[in-house]
Length: 85
Image (cartoon, rainbow, N blue to C red; front, side, top):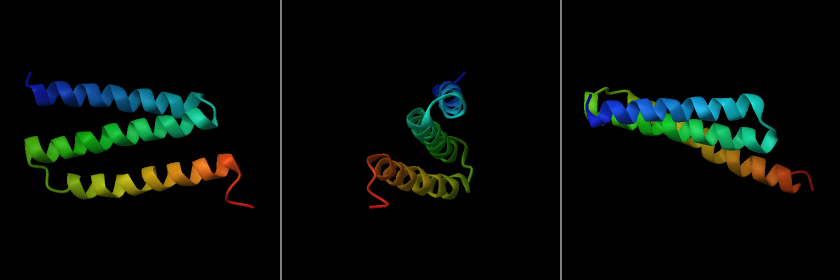
């Protein structure tokens, strides 16, 4: 087992942990779980491209960055009550 394979297994566990938070947590834990899963998935996709030369994985990773970042910002503003004032 190469270090890249071990990292992919650890990232898969991270995605599963994030999915568990999304499905069973409160609203605040759901956004944290989504961000954990997104970061692990993005890191795994970048590793796939670097290690195994999968060409389309960086494009998918870039597409996953935007919903995570903008979703977190909007959700934080919503919790503070800043959107509908």
